[in-house]
Amino acid sequence: MRNTLRTALVAGMLLSTSAAFAQDLGLDLSDGPDLRPTVAVVGIGAPGAAAPAEKARADKLATALVAASKKTNWFAKVMDPAQCAAKLGDGATAALACENAECLADLARQLGVDRILTSQMEFPADGPNLKLSALDVGGGAASLEVVDVLAQGKSNGFERSVAQAFKPLLQKFSTPLGTLKVVPSEPGATVEVGGRILGTGTVEKPVAPGVLKVRVTLPDYQPFETEVTLESKGTATVQAKLEKKILVAAQTGEAPPLETSKPASPSTPFYQRGGLYLAVVGLAAVGVGLAYGLKAMDVQNRAQTPDANGLIPVSRWQRYQAIKDAQLGNVLMAAGGAAAIGGVVWFIVEPAPAPPGKDREPGGPKTEPTPVGFMLRIGGEI
Image (cartoon, rainbow, N blue to C red; front, top):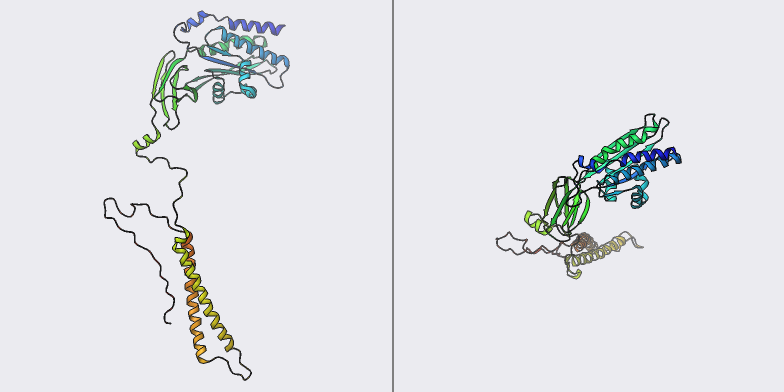
């Protein structure tokens, strides 16, 4: 019962802020488009070991903060913890632990709000502590505020301390938006501001003030990027001129991007390749050389085996002819082997035909390509 009364007291304190306070801040939202920002109160996280009563206390305090935010009428939309959890799904628990600007900015993009607030509550022996982490995303540049609220041994005055710390955050968060209009030169282009997609085509929407990073993209066009300063309750217009990628390459003298795949160069049919016939001739020369070598070896073997009378069955002319056959066989096998290897290499590694016009300088006389041939002579005197 005591906790219920205490929660009701802080809610009453937070809700006591009236429209007159908005006038004191210089907020005039009665005319023109609704430039009020949107805010999400993600909730108040409690340690896993916290008692059920302590967790209930954190939930009630979060409810009071949401109610106070709505009562001011400074915000076009206030998302409560239940709505945030429904949109974040499995990431709702981790969202309560967000404390740095990058994490909170990502939450703001997921929830689609301009301002975001989350907090962690602890329950030490000397009284509860609350750490408020608030983010104002202005043009994609995150401005982080962290406020620590300590009970300092006085648990009964904790809710009052939270109310006093939360009031300046609401005041800062109530800064109105500005109106940004982006007009792409091509229909269907996607408009982004600070990494957040605003829409396609011509876009005119309320955006958090600041230095905005505007990016406009469309397939087959160069991305358009610029920065523009938008004041609170002000208006900024961006004319995004998109240019074709090929046109940009021609204007800058840059070569267009190379194709990832090229058609295969036309190759000469195998029966028209000179390497094939060179290899065949080389193999034939090796065969003839081998035959001469075997003939010479036969004479040599007979010369080393005398007959029954001790005579060598080889004439002087046969011996002379065997020497010539051995020499000719060696020459034919060496030359034929080289020709066969060269022919195989020529057959496999065939040079691609030169592109037309590459054999002469621009404006110079046309020269005919020099023919290249091979000649193999077999025979002759030794």
